[in-house]
Amino acid sequence: MEAQSGARIEPRDHEPRRGVSHVTKWIAGASPQRWARMYGGLYVINIVFGFFAIGYLPAMLVVSGNAAATAQNIQAHELLYRLGLVAHIIVVLTNIPMTLIFYELLKVVNRKLALLDVFFGLVATAIEGANLLNQFTPLILLGGGHALSAFTPEQVQALASLSLDSQAMSYTIQQIFYAGDLLTAGYLVFRSTFVPRAVGVGLWIGALCYLIYSFADILAPGFAAHLVPYIQVPSGLAECSLCLWFLVMGVNVSRWERQASQASEFDQSVSGRAAVE
Image 1 (cartoon, rainbow, N blue to C red):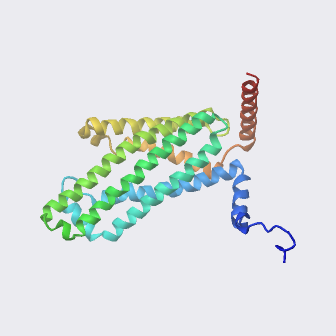
Image 2 (image 1 turned 90 degrees about the vertical axis):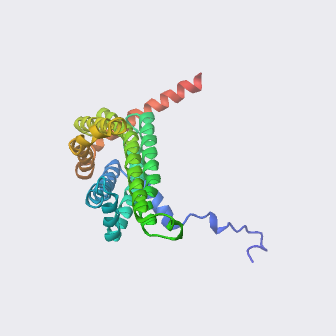
Image 3 (image 1 turned 180 degrees about the vertical axis):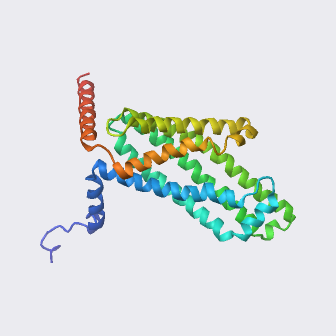
């Protein structure tokens, strides 16, 4: 009847869903304190699952220089190994919203450097995500199959161990990009007025430790092995300090808003000059 009277019926597909609308409004209206607490909460998840997948599990299952023992450990604790893979996937997933939230919080300090931090973080995350395939490879190899019947058990074990070695080197490369992320983040935190400068300095120190170990592992693996675990301590403390500060203390909202206002005024003045020219 409405169509015959000439009334136009708008397609319902163009109407925003109520749930999506509420989520969008909630995100758009999120305060810097809420962003900080979300970042800290995600970081806790990232650290806990990362420690299990990258720290605890390899130390428990991988026997350096013994491919047979490593293969036997993986086969004997296959479910635990798969749980480590799931934990690592969660780490990669949390990296993405953490990168976005950090940009939202620190872009008021320097938008271009905050964007550079996003690029460093996403490239490091992409490398880490692609590297997960190397962690799946031992399960495929040790699971057998017709394609592997031409290899002896010792050869299959060696191939599985080789994939883990490749995974370790890929992780070393990823840490170089992650160090760039920490260096940029440390500068932004140091220049901010709403997070203690000591946190930024800690991120710089952590980034340098990542760089020293990564390049040492590439150039002199024997020397790099002697640096572990000592060189990992400053990096861990730096990341934990950033995580806990945002989770517990958040940011100084009044200072964040003042810096956001200054950044907005600067952007407007730049746009005005560009328009005149």
